[in-house]
Amino acid sequence: MSNGMIVTEPPQVVWSANRDNPVGANATLSFSASRNLVLFNSKGDLVWCSNTSDILVSGMRISEKGNLVMFNSTGGKVWQSFDHLTDTLLEGQILTRGKRIISRISAKNMTRGLFYLSIESRTHLSAFAEGGKCTCPVGVDGQKYLTPINSQFPELGCRQIHEASSEGTSDHEYRLVKFGNLSYFSCSDHNKAIRGIDDEDSCLDACKRNTSCKATFFEYNKHSSKGYCFLAPNVLTLRKTPSSRFCSSSSHIKILTSQSNVNSNSSASHSSYFGMTLFTIFACVLVFLMAIVVFMLALQKKKLDDWLDHGFLKRVSSETPRRFSYDEICSATSNFSELLGRGGFGTVFKGVLKNGTPVAVKRLHNRHGTQGFLAEVETIGNLHHINLVRLIGFCASRKHRMLVYEYMSKGSLDKWLFCQNMDGAFDWNTKRKIVIDVAKGLTYLHEECRNKIAHFDVKPHNILLDDNFSAKLSDFGLSKLINRDASSQVIIGRRGTPGYQAPEWQHSRISVKADVFSFGIVLLEIICGRKVLDYSQPPSDVHLLSLLGKKAFENQLRDMVDCRSEDMQNHLEEAIDLMRLGMWCADGDCNRRPSMSTVVKILEGWMPLELINRTNLPFLSSP
Image (cartoon, rainbow, N blue to C red; front, side, top):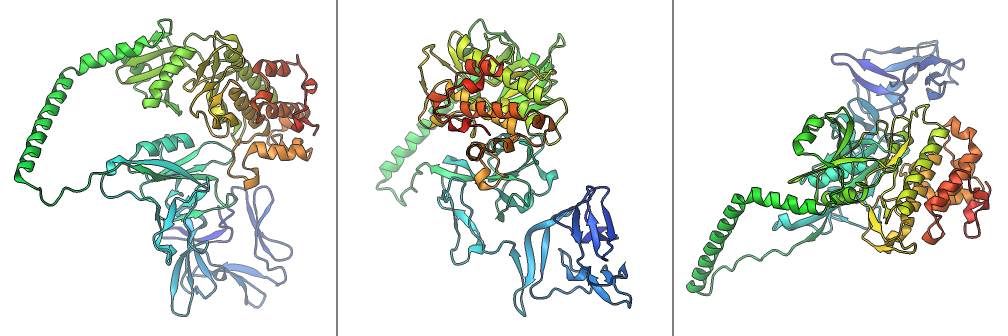
């Protein structure tokens, strides 16, 4: 709530003293001993003060016009709300030069918005976007994609530097460019967010599939990787907002990347009547032939689909798990009614098989998903390890590609790791057990299979937890088989998730040590209780590795242990040891990273971290 006045018919808040810092239940408003009107929150922290301690205040009243007045013993006004404007002018209230009426974020949120009214001269009442001069935003990569429509009048707005022509619009190609923490006036009401989408990757994917979407704005919940997704069909007023004032957000705008050449308009006249006749005949014959081809394809569609299914399944080993029909999947999931989440390749639904076994069904939804389908079926179909999510079966029915996994009741690790109100069960011993489970799962993939298997997308979202918080690796859509040669590398296109990708991805020569780097990042996130890339932090602290390097140099690693968990603080030295291990795994040189079997030995106490050669690891100094 805010400290303010309410009028009726209809009720509406028209003034608030603490509009940018509302308080909740059990807050108190009272006169102090020094005759200040003070507002405290439920914790006893001072939120607002009238600053009238030097004036003898005798009382307070609200006038019929809605003016909150404090008066002295003679009845004279010593303070009034009319002198402190918010976003509403009441009868008798005056807007003078130097004063502003600043908009609110929404009808129910009194926090200062993007616009204000002020008197800039004796005769003009003007409206402005708060923040001053209008500028075109720059991408977080430093590139300039937008330019003013008119450089002399920047308030007219911006346009893309490379705009699409009015012809050939179907051939335009776009990509979503990140512009950082921008606020948008239409994205303040959470009721207008896209339902069923609570992570940024799914928000971006929804915009890519929606041709009317021009930009995405994702507002993060505090201390969480989840939030609210807004898809904007038009982009009007944007504003770069400090993270300390509003919730941390991430914005992306669709930018034109290429445009195929379009044919120039036909000549106004042809050189001869004969040439025009030949062109007409050729066009008619071509259309006729195309109609015949389409007709024949329509007649053979079922037979063609069956042939494609047969060819597709020949690529899948006969030893793979059970094949389900599409009808069986629909029955198990009640027609895909219970959504569990969205990933890079598909959408996951909860289901129950006829024998009562709960399952998670991942439905792939694009061309990349088909390749991911083959990768997961061929890679994990014959793998059996307690720390890998078990693939129960699959569905390959014409255009439908689905994978059926064992159901993990506690969901993904990121839902627990970045949750503001952590469950008491998610204590130090549980976190340490999760780290060991993930390390054992990667050890099995890297060293105990017939071929090395690189996961290439190790992150909290792909680590699932069962009822006992046992961790299992999932989502093998980006995995790759590598020859058993210990020094072998593969040349492959960039894969994975920013922040968890090893530096060697820039050179495309990758080994299983890329998974070791990603594991190190996950371990550091568990110990520090924050994401590897946290744009709500100051610019110098956005990247977790950079911040850890600075703290290690200052011998202040203990400051990085998750302060939200008292249990973590009780195991401070052990937490710092694991932090050192995580930094070793995340070494920029892949040759200096340990193998996952070495990591398991250290975690289980068979190899003390202190005995590791630290010659090339300066960050492993004592805190």
